[in-house]
Every structure is written in C-alpha cells, then in structure tokens.
Image 1 (cartoon, one colour):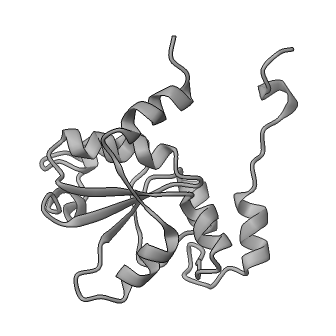
Image 2 (spheres, one colour; image 1 turned 90 degrees about the horizontal axis):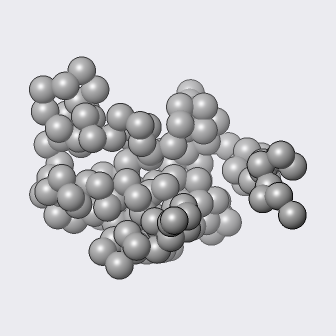
Length: 154
C-alpha cells in the first residue's frame, strides 16, 4: 500500500520543481509563467502570491479542459505556456503538476516548498482583497495544524 509521500515521490520522477528565488526572478520577465494555486478556497483567500489564478485541486481536470462548467480559460488555453503549480508546502502541487502533464500541458513545474517557502524567502503575499499580508501573519496562517487525533497511533 502506498502512502501520500510515496505518491508524491513517484510523481517527482516526472515533475520539475522550481525554487522560490527562481520563480521570483521569472515573475518580472515578459514571458512570466502562469501561477496556478491549487489550494482550498479558504487557504487561497487567507494568503497567496499576487497574480495567481485559483483552481482548487478537486476541480483541476475540468478547469484545465474546455467545455465544462469549471473551465478556467487562462488554464485551459495554456497548454503551451509555462505554468507553476502552487500549494502550501509543495506536495499537492507535485501531484497536480503531474496530472496537468498527463493532460498534455508541456511546461509545468511545481513550486518547491510552496507558499510557505515563498514566505520564508520573504516574498510578498496578499489576501483575498489584494491587501499585503505581513510575513509573521503569513507564517501563522501557513503553519501545520495536525491535530492529535490525526497522528499515527503508537
């Protein structure tokens, strides 16, 4: 039986990762990548990289294809565009990037360390209204919240 970490490791054999500092340097260029945040709505609303489009992972496949209620034109039309997939820590984004590659997207990468790493690199983050989020406030919002009952039994 495979675990979550095994699935991520399997996908990493085929998925490129990009570090936060490399992404930061790419964002200022004319051919900047499309930023695709696949976290849940509450996560995205609390804090995200400005300019990201939001497509929760649960609707990724239909959002990335034409002729569905969930279709996101910027994504569905981006099969030849560079896309950086973003999540909180860089695991869900690997799985999502792998899915996009299987759907024919050619230039997909996952943001290694996710939004947490972006914040650790002291890059700007915003909330749903576009207001800047303080680095320390973002740290608190991005912290792991594994409850005792979610831990593996001894």
